[in-house]
Image (cartoon, rainbow, N blue to C red; front, top):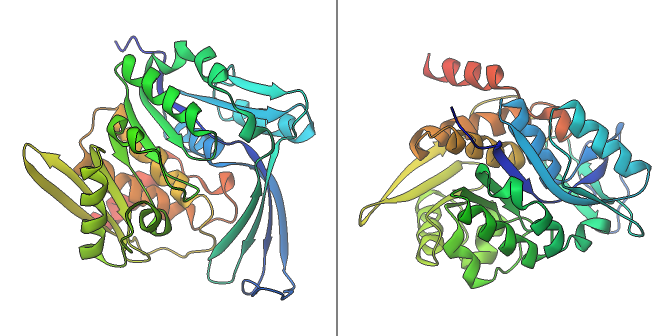
Length: 315
């Protein structure tokens, strides 16, 4: 029996999302009339925690929210999904973060966020979660909280024998020393371009970006190549192996949350001891399903749905 307390511990942002859907995204200086408004808990860290829990993992979230009604709604949603909230700190002065999400008719999105309490997550907050971070199979982190917190989470996770997955969002330059602690880095196209200077617009350039990230120290890289799919690469001995994960054909409504579903599903597979070649398609299917429902947390699929999509693809 696994003596670890958790399968996945997530360190990242928790927000409330305010989403408007319209026929298209506005250009700078334009106003566009939307047809639907939605308010719901979100934030990359919270989304990933919920996604992993829905896929059957034992999950905890390390983060910081305000002592306000928005924070209450974030905690309530996490508890409903079975996510442990013992290491979510309530900030006495900063508000819970918010994200303003706009979704166009083809499912494309743009998001403007105010970090609020997320930016005040401290190294001490992360150290207070030591018991969780040293007793989990996977630590999943993203760049929406201070870098020193990410570095501390990686160090504690590694000390406990965990594998570390980084979702490098939002697209920012990264401290070079962080790469060596990563088992997998999973950038989207914009993030890969920021980190490597390579625009992964197709499998060939995705391979180049993945190789660059691995040269920097990451153990494996899964790079989004626009709308084509993802290039997943890893080392076997001295040889670089890779598999291309083409997009699943689904009725896309909203891409919000798809990246979170992918990173969480990949982490769950690693926690279960599955190899990357198996984890990739599972994660890709989870991400595809997340585009079929409006909103972030509302769209995150359950394991049976992912398995059904994979079976339909094979069939």
